Length: 552
Image (cartoon, rainbow, N blue to C red; front, side, top):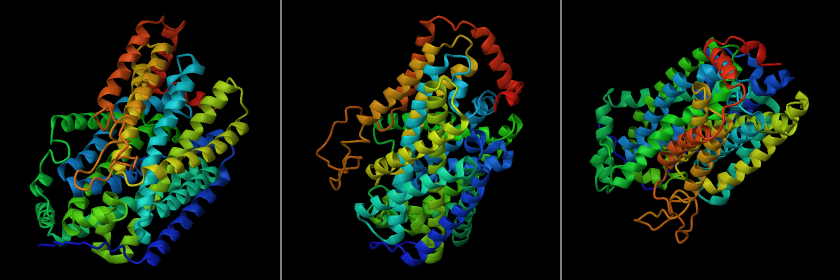
């Protein structure tokens, strides 16, 4: 069947219906958070939800945390506009979970208490390593928050049918304030329940849309792809067939191919270093439940990413690239416009509410991770030298949430208009550069020293952030057709990009591993490194001793 549509005007449904459904969801999640907040009495309650969630519950929450606005809105848009190359994001995000499962999930749960820094500092000097790990955590959370805030601005702009930057700034501010409230009141327990509800709604909603599309096309995926090519051709695409082949986005030159390799490295290695995902393993009571969490998360995430292939090509076929590019939010609007095409304003309102829930759940998880890292690692372990009162530590964490929310709001305003799947890939690059080498060395290399950890964390973090600043992501990328800026700095005349790649992973990740090795080999082993490594290895592999050490 042929469902071509040459849409020039962008219909965004009924704003009243859209916002009503959206507000209903906000009210429901606020009730959940308020109910969950009743049991937030200790630091373990606030940071780790009292370690009270089962493997299936936590796996669903992990899926809710991991399946961000980038996964739903960004990837669907990338596939709709770039076809095969857009689906590479789905593949990278999914394969990354195998790395997380094989390398870090169980070991982190067995050796940590609340944060990633607990593991990194287990057998090294506490104060400098905790400070470095906390700064890396804050940097990853900041880049991830940029993506979610940008998605929120485009999403609600589409719901209201508005296209001005000022209105999207207001939306970003509202999302930030809601995030602050959720985390201040609900802590990790409230955040986890919001993530579970959001995961169920997101996967159910995308499943319904996928089945709907497949029914329309007689369960013939080839027909969907063929219509996507035909629609692109009808709307003036010079090479519509490239939607079905590698190279449309990353194969035009040797530079774009290198950029793809860099992106792939960041996606595949970044998950095992994402602090807000790693922190979820501390909400289960033991290592067995941590393993079950990952298995459940892999199944849920894998099924979801298969849905994105259908939804992306269906958006290209039924909505068309012109309408997607013209909509508020650009490529990030593809899945929402497809929902409007399939089910009218009601389905659009529901899917938009689910997408907004996605953003709220993820930003809440990021905020509590960043707050826990600052309060637990910097305030309690560095400033107070491990002698902070737990109640005071939680108060510091709550205040940190407010600061993080303000920073996220300001940064999100600058990120509006960027593809959020791409922005999340930058967060993955920072995580893979600053965190993963030190995690791997700490868990698996007996000789690893404090200097190696510091050189690896700071070297990976600084190199990655500097390369991003001087890349086309921030300045100098211009649409050849319109002359408009495609970078964060919207003035096309401002160009200080000297690093040619959009993702720095291919440089910063190997550099961080190298610096960790050099720092270790040029320093003396820790005084009791053999004893501490043996203890860490036993605890990481067996869980022996971890239960009594986690909540003292």
